[in-house]
Length: 491
Image 1: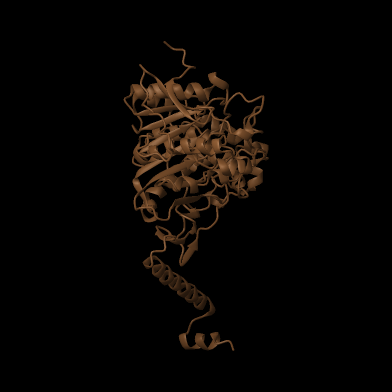
Image 2: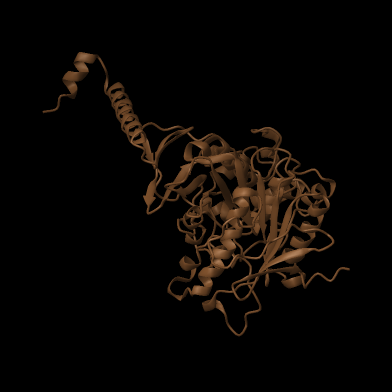
């Protein structure tokens, strides 16, 4: 028998009010259950600023995946600064990655995405040891992909193995392509979020770091001990964050892997606006159309992506996309900021692979050495490295060294995930060594071990200075050595 009508008569509630009351009751039950679970010390149940969330325990690591750190940037929120995530009632499961950000996936197995891309993508993921103490050091990962590809879901980016070494790992998504960098005269005139900026992907990165500051203590991390680390476009992002005037207090140290600093003139707000107008015109939206912005926001996500990825970035005129621009807030001329001392003076690790983009005279390799010298001259502790190891199964007669991005599974200690059954003991040892340096740096700001897991202590890695110019080489044998960079021909 259906008792709802009689209950409605007794309470005077309509069906809408009954539904709301039921929803609130379910939420209250969820809160009670979560409180009881927390009281029992279940580490996967935590309360953050938007509600109670449940993670998953796998062996000795607990993780939370797919936690929204901002509202979905869709509809009227497309090309807006990230807005606050909506709170929820009851207990929200955080058991799977959220969507990676909208893109045309790049046909590569370097770091294949684990989720289908979508515009609703602003999610964070957290890993920590189950038995970890409170206030763990926090490492925050920023992926690469040329600002048009990438995501937090690739299996080799999982933080499980790093968490086992006694730290907390956080990853998150940021908008890419024309969703991440876009300008248009109508958008700029609205000033919906204050001074106009085309850098929506950088806004997402700052929002994620602010989310970390608000919530990481509840999850077991130390907000005063946060290390940001990024590779390629993620490394460029780290330079932007270190030199931005609005990121004070968001991190305590930084790691740049194969990423060069932004130099003034490479991308400007005017160039981004011109690209936005050209893109709109390509969709039949005239510059003087009074409804241009509304029509642009009504385009499908596929139409905005418009085939853009690492293999298909527009090179013809008129240009319809630009990478992040120097806007004075989220991104400045990083090179000038380093040289003048106007940046976050935190310890930094910086380096590249031995066969990086452009080779030994390319921007990754030369850029890393130049930044090491500039920072050392500013009396900032800087650790300069090169990653030279190539996985056993990846070596061929054509191998010249470690290619761009091949160091990531070793710094993450996920070589066994990347190479599967072909992983060798030497591969595993190289991953333990590289990840050990990274974890030590995240813990203390010094990559040298106080008590290393390996039977043979790794070499002492000194800070860079202009006289000795020491470089740590994570070498081709799977070991490490320290000496002056043999490619440094300066006197």
